[in-house]
Image 1 (cartoon, helix red, strand yellow):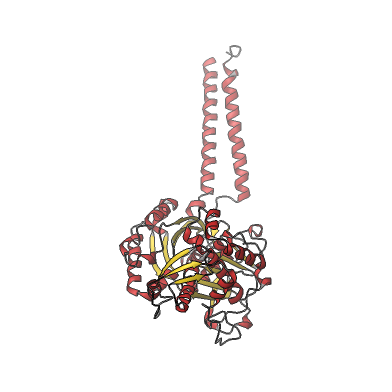
Image 2 (cartoon, helix red, strand yellow):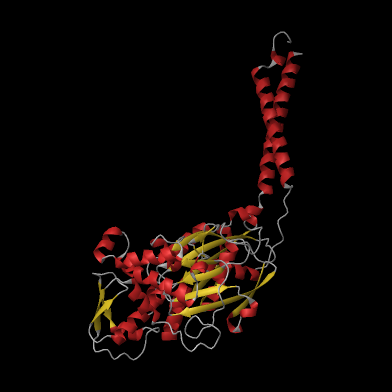
Amino acid sequence: MGIMLRKYCHLKYIVIGLLLVVALITLITVAITQNLSSTRNRKYGIVLDAGSSHTNVYVYEWPAEKENNTGMVHQIHVCEVEGPGISSYANAVENASVPLKHCMDSAKEIVPHGKHQETPVYLGATAGMRLLSLKNKDAAKRVLSAVEETLRIYPFKFQGARILSGEEEGAYGWITLNYLLGKFTESIWPKVFAHAFFNSRTTGALDLGGASTQITFVPDPDKIELPTDIINFHLYGKEYMVYTHSFLCYGKDQALRLKLLQDVLSSTTDRLQDPCFHQGYVRTLNVFDLTTNPCTARNITAPYSQIQIQGDGNYEKCLESIQKIFNAEDCLYSSCSFNRIFVPEVSGEFGAFSAFYYVMNFLNVTEKPMDQVIETVKNFCSKPWNEVKVEFPKVKEKYLSEYCFSSTYIISLLGQRYNFTKEKWQNIHFLEKVQNSDAGWTLGYMLNLTNMIPAEQPYTHLLSHAGFISFMVVCSALVMTLFLVGSIIYHKPKCLRKEII
């Protein structure tokens, strides 16, 4: 009798143990199966932004099941490539792709190994390469070929490297901004995440780089006088008619060269008093550099090969000298921005990013009204160079010396050329990031390209969300009960007591 009771007791141990193991395995299996879509239905893309001054590598992720045939893409990684933009390697093509390797290696770590071969890689070169192509098409082709050769080494699906047009750069920047603000579809980001100062209309985009600047927005259809600058987009089931124009040679770096060219042409000595640099600042300008730059290349008869620039630090005079680089005459339309280019009347909210943001952020005026911005720029430009260097010891001298010009140029471009009045200036919002993604053309480029990627069938979950939660609660309770019962029997085995035997 005692032997049989012992066998019965041992059998209970085995049964409870088996039930516990089965419950645990079921719990884990259902949890894994229910969440397979988090890895199975994710796609990745890599976009290289080869700008005029530097290159950035962005990694994007989106679900394979897409909304209205456009993938919901978001940025998960960015890496800034060391050194200048790839256009700077025209005379040393073999070195153009070397700095890219560090960032591409980091992208290889970010993208899951199993997704490498299906992850597309795109390189888009902007104004720096557009200028190089104007100057020397063969050199531009060699630079792109060298970069392509390196990118093909990586286990990704390389889709090519090309030079984007200015209009593409502007339009994709507009897509990025409005996507991140949730203007295309509310289901991407809940409205609570959107910036409070943006309304439900699409938001215009203002982009300022080193070699070009873009303005893009949805204008009043009745006020369009030139249809050539209109681009139509189909995104998330809707049609958008967008005005965009890119002004090559009017990025902040090239605009400075245009101003210096005007100064050289009007100078009779080898010394220039420049109001756009701080008093006490001195820079030597090689006139030859102006003659070889596509934006300033012309017959210069200056008797000097070098000219010394001496800062004078005067906002009003700086603004006056900047106005000379814009041709505001001979407009063929009801209104022009400059150089005979028609721009519809600006209206609604605008997001200003890239150098617009960096310059205004340096001066801490990103949220200030126009009058206060102008006053701040005036005070900054009037400071002696030695004082400025002491106040900002960690800022590179090249950037620090040009903030007076850059900020004055932004005021001139936005206020006078685009006609953002004091009232309309309040509708400009200077942005670096939105929803932890960089404002710029790359995300918009990726969003547009996802239209060409076939959508997979949405992954069907084993259980509904409510059913999954209920199952996990019941199964967890069962595991805990079995564990508790087993523990009680083990510590108090009544079936083995002597009284029963």
